[in-house]
Image (cartoon, rainbow, N blue to C red):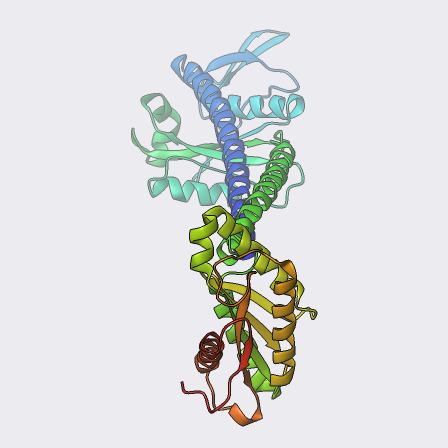
Length: 406
């Protein structure tokens, strides 16, 4: 029963741990999904802005300290002098992306980088991480994204390819790109993403685990108590409250083995109520049950040592096991049981042995002279002695001897 109890606790702990692991994994998956969605949104915004720029065949902006002409843009109309104080320069999609990235880094810490395996601008040379992603795009991969290991700020790197369109050819046809070719990509690095806390999940599972274990312990004790009651009912005679025949058989096997192992005597007493059928017929079954109960108690109280054992063998028969007791001691205890029974003075008008309820007892002993006996043979000897006590007139105890026939 205890093994079953611990097995249930172990199973519950495993279930809680599996649930905790699954939830933590799910939180991590959600964190990655959020990171991907955020990075894709920034990437899409850059692509849309680039498409707007390319759709206008680039745009002109005033030349300032922060917006200088693009030295890598080969275009005769790259710069337009409008007046002495105003010069416009053409900003193509790639140059615009670099400027947006610089602004984004200053304000949000989000970094964009347009890059290619064949960049026109050396500033667009890919990092090792970007180069690995560009190669994977050429092999068919659609995007890549992961948290950068070793970064204390939990940075997330994302990159997706740029596909050559008609608007790209004015600048990139000279590199051999055609419409549909992957000519590069844009990387997005998101710093300091919010950590999805697993603390509440751990605490919740801990509490669930404790409550579950408490429930198992509570109901386990209830079940254990019910099991003990059932086990007790299986071992105890319901009428007399002393052990039953099944328990006696288990007990005699234990004591028989111990007696032989320690080379100690073992005695067995078979007790039978004299003329009990006549008592039942005369006084009724209710009185008969009361008689059985009183005799059971008197036999039990007649045994003075803790190791002595008595049980109801069946009907009006009782059996006593006396560990480490020689034949003389067994006969003495049998006489004590007989006398205590007489002292009860339970009236029995139709008894042939006495006007009161009496017992007949047969005793048998396993000792050095009978070590070859089995437990069944020892019980049989006590039963034979009981038969002799009945035959000799009842209300007496007879010790088994070799003169008695089995």
